[in-house]
Image (cartoon, rainbow, N blue to C red):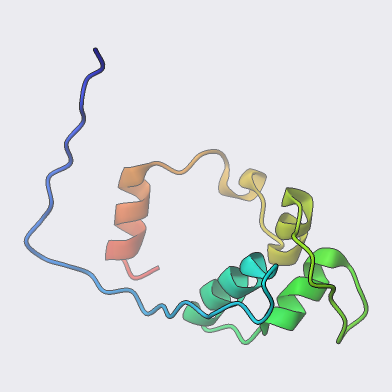
Length: 100
């Protein structure tokens, strides 16, 4: 049998300034997520801009197609190498607490 891990919740809560956008097209989940994340951090990229950055298409055109991992990485400009490795739960909690 495996062991269970329990993480104690604190009484205080932290609300993130984040609003998830609905997908503009049925295959644009990464564009909706990417644009939502960027806007929560003060950016202005639209779903179309995020999609074209990932697909490498002309501005104003992005097909309603699913994206592959390399396209998602290209759209964000961020990769695991930028983080210096995996990010643990404690690190995520610390970043949220710090308002990052």
